[in-house]
Image 1: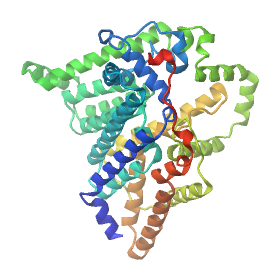
Image 2 (image 1 turned 180 degrees about the vertical axis):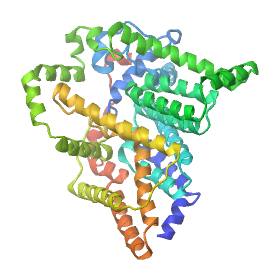
Image 3 (image 1 turned 30 degrees about the vertical axis):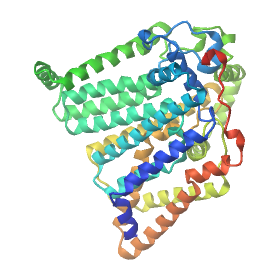
Image 4 (image 1 turned 135 degrees about the vertical axis):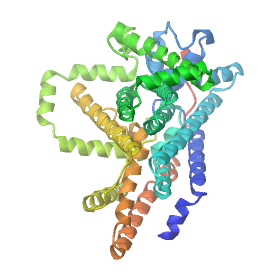
Length: 481
């Protein structure tokens, strides 16, 4: 066990982990067919839509053709546009060079890999702020890179990679702000929050809670508006470039947030207006998700809802939700799905039992800093919000939609960290005879779990002998031309 510990805490361990993660993601981005990753057709089409507009129009588009709805949905007032707009610039370059669609997709996928690797690095910096235990931090990063969806999402065109990076940057700056608040960190938080929301609007309640917590800790530390204004005024008078740039970025993203999110809410009474606000219902129904929800709502009568509520079992629902998250976190490559095998589920269950037993018999008191409590709090709040959203969807339209493990990725690293922290702390506080057996049991369980959920093996098992995973790179003419 000591030899294993020395390997994990060595200076070479994390570079190897990062390199292996990057190679996995790059291979997946090169190997897998277009449209297999979740919503990739939509994201590529949306990027192409922005690339077809003049640079002078900025992210403010109009005049969408209804024939593009099946691919890019209603896009002109979409609040989630930062990723598509940013990625349109390398695509503009590729378009000017008359590159093939295959090369365009590969380029955008590799840029997404870059976002994902940066996100992993920022996660490492967050853990450095929370803990000084190299063993726990390094193994946490390793565990994230051994999670299938973390690898597969990294190698696909998807706004989650940039959104997760911005969210983790927000967490990192929040932690540093809690430790030592100042005007520059305040401005950076006020830049990252709207930037993240404009990339993926579902982060809004999480970021709002995070801002509230950061302000509370700062207020307890005697940092209020007066000190903020004094520091800001002093920095501006001294013409400090960093502060001036942060002021500009804060005003820029605040303006974009007001234009899109606040503007949508005032005009359409929703931050993300329905497609039917801009097009006819029949036009919107050419978009498969809208059509699916439209038909489901018509079938979901008040009587059906009453029956669903009367038969609802919170324990069964929770179990199904956990299984759904597990299955899509380790086994779902995207829109092409496959199920975990019985052997995979057995070892996952054994690991879950090991975690539960360890937590139950743990007598060690884990002391967390304010930074640790912040990370734990925002992670728990995020998971609760995701669970609540899925339950609300069930009651709202009568179906279990959006049970996808990729939605756990923003806080997955923190979840892993606290589970590993609990297990290692319990191990270290056991007496020698018990400690030895405890360590071997955990080592065996984790090793078998990793073997049964190793991303390259799973990728080959389910795609290696099936040529349909590699598809032709084709989009409707309206999007490509």
